[in-house]
Image (cartoon, rainbow over all chains, first blue to last red; front, side, top):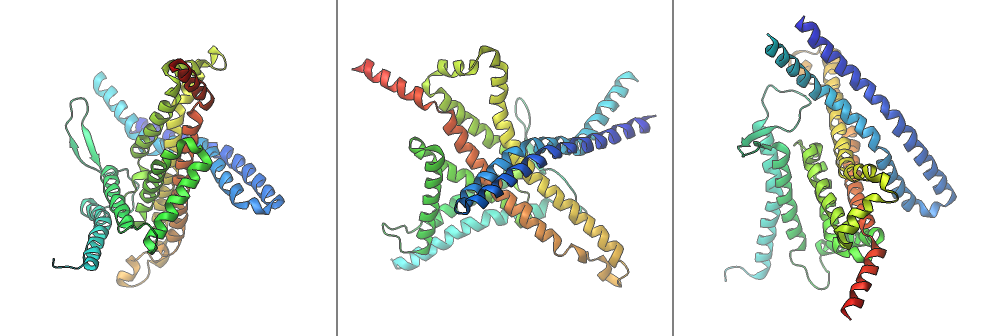
Length: 97
Length: 297
């Protein structure tokens, strides 16, 4: 019984990490838009290339934040959460039994 | 006097260079001494060397803290080395490089923050150098302090304190009132956005560096398995060597360690400048100063 419970915990943590990574879609589209606009701007005014590039990198980094949050959740779910939840389960069993 | 001036200069130079190199070498030595032999390629957090008992909570001394302090010492000696023998008129290569760095940092601060904040230039330069060199430390094989959230969170809290200080330039009441703008209903939202600043700053930098190192480790271990599968038939010890690991991890390291680390250092410094400059209520401050002057006269 305990094995099944631990298996469910680990499997659900892995599933959750995978689902959290779906959030990568948003920053991907957003950064793509930003880079497309930057390319257009450079095409229109090639002399402003360096300023546009640094602004674009800045904007990309800020747009990336939500993706990084999702990544952080995924990392926590893979490396930290299983241990924590299994410990909670074992403690609950010990307190009951 | 045993030595003439030139030899003395050289000797001090060598001592300062030793101060630059020795802390980094010490970090590598600590890494080699404390890594267990049987550990292969594995994803792990910062290693805890020992814990100091404290009244509220035990204080763990981790790999990232030690590396961070060693790096601070190293950068300190690097600055001393670069500015050693500075003359009024630049004639050495070293001084030209120094002046270029200072001019660039000053220009960056002047462009992004304005003349009022010129005193911030050393701070911004320090943040840039510390962040960039911390990320570059992973090139030497030691644990990069920037892939531990605690280090970056410390920097972000520092920036948060600076932001709050500059928001309070017009007095604490003005600061408290700014939470209820544009309407009083926005109070919870404003408080959340205030807290979100250091959180997003630290998570952004940490997430980028950490994800880079995790992807590098995963690919390195995958290549190890693949080369065992493909080249395992080679006789003797040749079959043990993961030949496929040559090449690809190095290319990835150029992106994840060098480019990403430099970019995040630049972005952290840029955001520091923008948040601090944006937090300062310039118009209200000028009005307040004018009122004060009128009162005194």
